[in-house]
Length: 274
Image 1 (cartoon, one colour):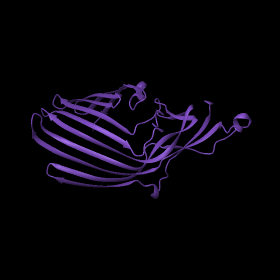
Image 2 (spheres, one colour):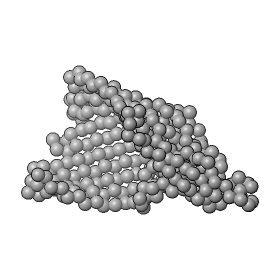
Image 3 (cartoon, rainbow, N blue to C red):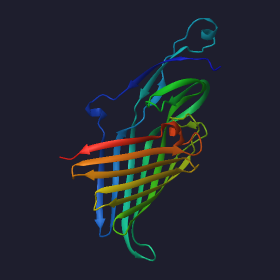
Image 4 (cartoon, rainbow, N blue to C red):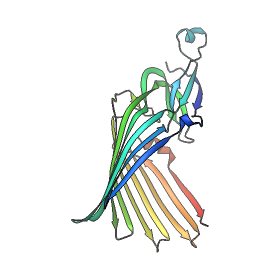
């Protein structure tokens, strides 16, 4: 109906106690130029999931139709078990490119929390990019949390050029098990895909006998959405470091990075080293 609805939103943060502890294990082993790790982490989700509690119904026609004017929403953090590993190897004397570092990382999340649109055309979460708060609007499907397994992996190549230019290329893919078309993104409210892919490029170089550093990070999604982060820093008198960094977003609408379209920024940071 697109009828405006009021909300009481409560964030249920975990209490500080033993049963809410997060813990993990890691095993690492080296074999000359090769190394690997095996990891486990029991932890809370980074983003809380919204659970609708008992709604408040007014009288009259709307109340008789079961349409709430006040909805109680509780944002809860749920625990997830993450299993992962990494592998890296230094490959030397390769034709044309010389030496590189090959990296592989993977993670499997058991009982991760996702959102599904239920079909009830009343509510949708919308991220306010100005302050990061989650607000709720009428006229879209109400999301409901669903626990599902997912996995992600990354393959990367690192290369040093002329001793002081660092280049890094990376491919990332994620996948949701038992995905269907009702899954929506928690920030945009738009449908998410069962497979998502990103490409990243990082370049770093020092100048003037390691007094000035430049860096640029480029992240591109599978639909052309992108995030570009240039950075330059300079060290004055071996004590004061000045850093200027930009963040610029663009590409296809309603995707991973374009939700920050109106949040392009340039930041200045000054640090004093004792």
